[in-house]
Amino acid sequence: MKFCDPILVVGFGSIGRRHTNNLLSITNSPITILSKRKNITKNDFINYNKNKKRIKIYSKIDKCLEEKPSVAFITNETSLHVNYALKLAKKKIDLFIEKPLSHSLKNISSLNSIIKKNKQIVMIGCNFRFYPTIRKMKELVDKKLIGKIISVQSENSSYLPDWHPNEDYSKGYVSSKNLGGGVTLTQIHELDYLIWMFGYPKKMKAMVGKFSNLKVETDDLSVSLLELQNKIIVELHLDYFSGPLYKRLKIRGSKGILSWDSNNNEIRIYHHIKKKYSKIKIKNNYKLTENVNKMYIDEIKYFISCLTNRKQPMNNLTESAKTLRVALDLKKSSGTKFC
Image 1 (cartoon, helix red, strand yellow):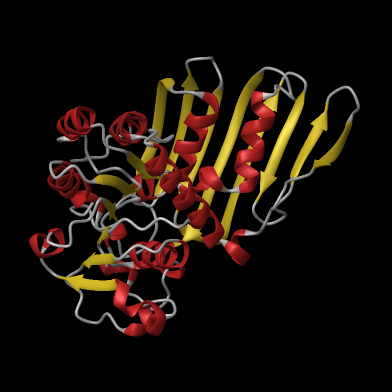
Image 2: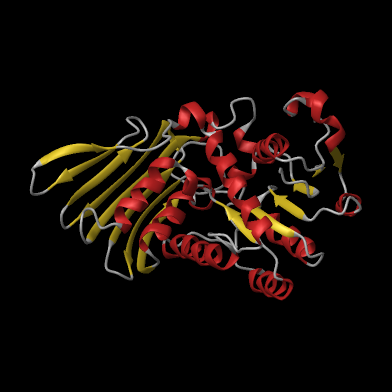
């Protein structure tokens, strides 16, 4: 039986549109959209003629609340996430908040108090936790396949103008300080899954800032060195001035090395004793350039299962707030101003 509860989507940019269409596909829910955009058309929706009776669009939050949503997806600009989350949490609405949680720690403790009191379900979306290669890497680490982890290298490089070729990247929230943009926060995926796999840092240092000729107000390069509580050393590189899209993760342990990159999209293991590489089978694997939406669908299905079972998800508010604090501390350690 499909999920049928009324859903509110706050914001209708690229990620709001993606979540809306995925919700239309995998639920039977009526969906209300809060957006001030004037150019939304039927072409923005999957199977519009079939789904049009399920869709309502308003420009005022109070009008949206008249539809009595029980769940809200907050997908607007980063700097507005917590303000809308507070308003909706007070109405006892369960929340899915797109990453990053916010651009500052302001009012997060107040939000946490409300959701704990009301026993609401809150999840912050970090879709790479649902990518088969990342999940497999975590599984192998948890099984201690390469022994004690000593060091980790993670990279995420892309070219910002390529993200949405039909839009002016310089006018998007990613390029704006006031709206919470910048590569450290926008590309928080790597920091999120590294903490998920290995734990939180106790020491960190970063170089963060604008180094390229992109027309942005924000940091476009973030290079960090972290020492985790368990003495694992992590090197993290984030940028959005170099293309094409490239991600990699290399984990060095006492018994061998695990490595993956988005070009080959395979996990390789080097055995210190065997002195050779071998490949690790990944179930239901796919390239990012071929089926990236699968991650988002799996993410929503997981969230809906948490709603149905009234079970707090991984990457809940408490967990995500800790990761946000690390990201902000990285920017602060570099001397980069943040709100």
